[in-house]
Image 1: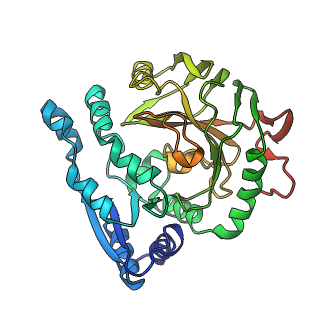
Image 2: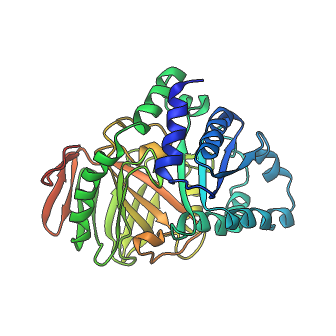
Length: 362
């Protein structure tokens, strides 16, 4: 057993979700994450909690979408919601056998199923912390290593370095950024590939210190729904449901996407934006600030944390940000800001990926 796996399990249980004696903890993962699930199970037992394991079968999603009837696709898993409502904590493991399993599936069926499953994700992500505290946590697997163009050993080092940090001290840095934005009103992203303005007035700002996601390392907020005006071109590919969309360009008027293009899978991009009436609005503006994540991997759990990047999420706004946009999707798309700047109320707070906020050294 890699000792780093045991350490990561300890961090997840004791720090990220803070399991207390008597609490029930759902541990959700697949075949490739079994060693990590075992260590999480042990850690929950050691803190006198009650582990509930949820195992995802391999190689069934493709079969489901190609063979399930409309009735099966529309069936809501009541049993799963019952389990979640009986639990206090949720640990979801980000690991897989095949990142492109859904590439050739009918995207309309995938989207339809996503709408059915939406209450599950909403309960996990948007419940008050005294009802459900959750973390989505990385675990190294070969499929994600391949997407990241790394050897498995290189990828393991990348994952553990990004996760096993001094989160309390890093959190102090993130809080300084958070405090500045919480006092702000208007954000202007300006530079190569972007000229976009929007309001964040009255919105909550969240500093992810490894409590919602592990690795943590972003400061995010929800823009005022109808305030976005301008355009942005994203440098990095966006992957959703196994489909890779490249060179995304979005133009906004009064908060809504009025133009959307891409060099690859443009049809899928437009389909996602039209899932519901709120999918064409932005639910999140986030800024990456994890000092150990420096390269693009095609995995949002890491890519949205790259220092010197921002991301916009089409669709749902998390309730702890103040909400304001309810949608079946929450799709983060990442942009490199190393040739641009972030301006807050007329003052440059980040330029070419470097912070201009006093005391921030990331």
